[in-house]
Amino acid sequence: MLMYFLLVNVSVCFMPIDLQPILYRYGYAVPFYNVSRGVRTILFGTKNNLGLNFGVLIAWAVISMFTLPLFQWLRRRNMDQGGVAEDGGEFQPSKELDERKSVHSEATRS
Image (cartoon, rainbow, N blue to C red; front, side, top):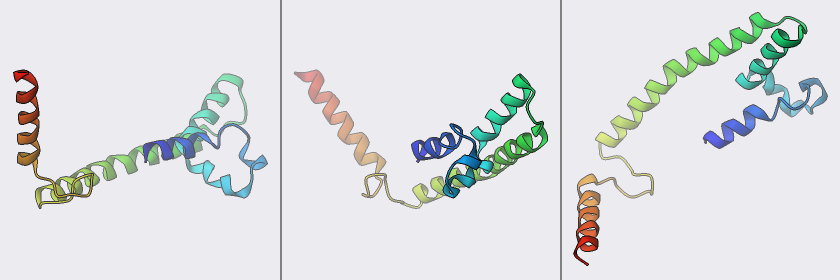
């Protein structure tokens, strides 16, 4: 998921969005595009849209501050209620811990 977000985020910065197909119009709302426009404005003195650029970045930060704890809380609640592990099986920490201990003890004996 993180790799997808990075590709989506960076893919709009190589050319101006006006020259890209309509599919890439989402780029006006992604953080990396706004960071690159802000840096260009500061370094090269291009058209000043710093208010818009910083506004988009602050909106992303605020959204992240609310959604990240929410998703962590939901994930923890799911795991506490006997949720599903990453591999699709039921999460049983004591069973996994016992398996690791037995593998480790067998390796140290030989």
